[in-house]
Structure formats: structure tokens, C-alpha cells
Length: 267
Image 1 (tube, one colour):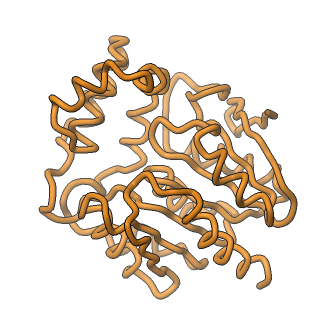
Image 2 (cartoon, helix red, strand yellow):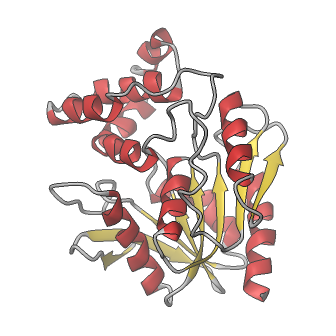
């Protein structure tokens, strides 16, 4: 593990392996750098791969107040460490963060995304309008278990009885450990889980090649959202992974990313 300092002085913990062109992996809700270890190991055969703890998680620091721009600056610090430019892969809400960073001018040369969790139609209920505010209230009260449960029901869409059973599982403690950052992911997503079409102009400044991936065996709104994103511009393309859900098998994901990033490295 090593560390870089973001623009506001926050320490961001990361790990680096492999050699070759730089690729930074951006995790989604609950994820720390260890959750991307298998994917990173496979990509490290061809690339210098950087995994990191997003602010407020794992060994990274945090600040008293949150703004999406601070997370953009965290990514910029890692890209700076990598030599000033990098290819980026984002998972779930981390995909939206990576896309937003690219739109705001981060030095990303090629961008791959997997299942940004957009809700753009009526295939499932949208997020409550007070979703982020309620998460903040629960976190402020130290009710981390309740925050996780609220995320799993309101954002993921699981039935309450299923979530009640999950509270007894070993992995629940790990989710509670990062629960204070759930409002961050909510702010990254903005209004893209509202059941309305994606804003056509939000990411129009992204002109680099963008690969949008989705499984075809998970929640229908995931594939719908990926298709809609991929249709926004000619530089966006869609790749569907047969039989995969939101928790995609790294053995299937890594070769697709390798091909996509290798094309960028040779350009």
C-alpha cells in the first residue's frame, strides 16, 4: 500500500501492480481496493494497475464535508502519480464517478464502465426524493446498519425480509464499515436513478472512447440504463456479457477490458 494526497490534503490509499500503460480501477458502493484484487491481478499482466480506497473507506482519509468534485480530485491525484494520464475502469456508482471525472476534465484517455446503476424507466421504482438526505440522517446518528439496510432496499431494490436475513451474515460488518460513504455514492448518482431518461448533455464533453458494459441476466434496468448511456454519442459503445449480473466474474471481464485498453495503448 502507498498513499497520495488529494487537492484538499486528504490522504488516498492505493496499491499498484504490473507494468505498462496505467489503468485506474474505481469501485462502487461499499468497495475498497481489495474488492478489485482479482481483476487487478488479471489486468496487471499487460498494464500498470492502480486500485484505491475511495475517500472515507479503508485506509484513505476523508474531509468534514463532501462534494463530488473532491472525489474527482482524488482520481486526478492518482492519475498524476501514474504519469499524468491513464485509462480508467469504473464499477457501478464508481462508473458514474469515473464518467463524471472525465466530463470535468480528468486526464482519462480511455474509459470503461460496468453497469452504472441508472434507473431510466418504469422497470423498477426510482429512488425516493429524500434518499440522500435520509442516508445522511442515519449516518449522522451512527445507525450504520440501518443505513446499509436502507441502501439495500431503496437503491438495490431488495425486499425488506431479505435484507433482515442479511444482517446476520458475516459480510454485513464489512458493509457497515463503509456505510458512512453511502451518501457520497448517492450524490455521485444525482438524479440518474429517478426513472427519467438520462440527460443528453450531461456528459457531452466526453469525447474519448467509452465502453459501457452490462450483464444480461441481472436486473433489467441495469441493461436498459447501459444501452441508453451507450446511445448518447458515437464514441460510446455497448458490450453485453451473457449470463452475468451486477457482480460480474473477473475472468470474463478482464479479457474485454484488456482488448479495449490495449487498443488505446497502441493508438
